[in-house]
Amino acid sequence: MISKNYYHDKFKEELKLVEKQISKPSLLLHCCCGPCTCYPLSILHHYFDITIFYSNPNIYPKAEYDRRYETLKRFVLEYSKDNNFSITIVKQDDDFTKYMNLFKKYSNDKEGGNRCTLCHEYRLKLAMDYASQNNFDYVTTTMTVSSRKPSYLINELASQLEKQYSNIKYLYSDFKKENGTLIGINISKEYKMNRQDYCGCNFSYFERKTRYAKQD
Ligand code: SF4
Image (cartoon, rainbow, N blue to C red; front, side):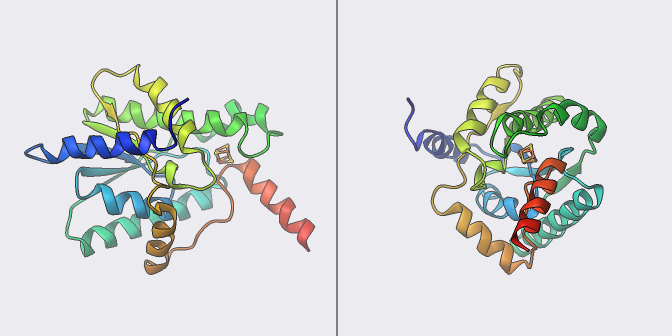
């Protein structure tokens, strides 16, 4: 059994190695939304030349997918300007129908079950494919900052996937540590972002609707 801080310690060790490099290595940062990007970006921009990667075919409906992207883009551009660093944004509109066809058999799973494990893995793979094809030094995701997503699971999934790629390094992280979630919430307030009230997919969208209906 690995310790609670295992992946956070790995993260800090890797940053120490990066600090010794003459120039900043490139990092593809998979972002699920603006609010989840706040804290990771506030740390990572000191160490890496960052490209934001928005590829989230799970998000439903399309208007919400676009809204989350616009919020992310606005934040990233304002934050990088305020903190004097440059950043690139890549939006990859993956196949929404393919995602739905793959995941519909898990429609009755509760949030946090098999469906979510596969969903994290699916998006990690999209990011790793892109990072590998475009010769990034590192790749990681903001998803470990979310209190609804188990950091351990995301890191374990990444460690399995990483074996398929010889030219990229996965940056293990646990952005919940050191008050990351709370710091992220405060940054998102400072940049006037709306925080969404469901995870993203149509299953979680309808779960939320049912939850609200019961409260009425
Ligand atoms: S609830 Fe979130 S993590 Fe789970 S399948 Fe839906 S979008 Fe993916």
